[in-house]
Length: 88
Image 1 (cartoon, rainbow, N blue to C red):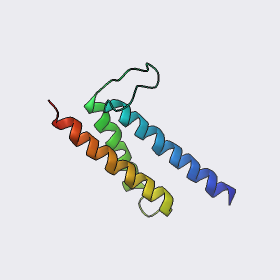
Image 2: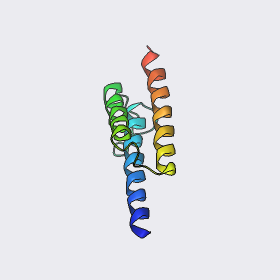
Image 3: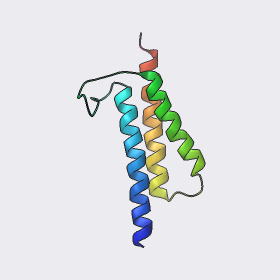
């Protein structure tokens, strides 16, 4: 069904976009507009929290591909957030 594929693509694009912002705020990749590494753990946590909220609000409504992608991204981001937070 084309509508389902379009919705899945839109959802995955949203998740990817939010995760890229989080990676940028974690200082793990260059900011897309400035092309500079910027680290802001408050902003990174905000993006991670938003992804966690989306996971909670969409629970039971995602297909396995969407669920796996969201879980994997959150696990990676949270692990890196803890790692960055522990650096002094």
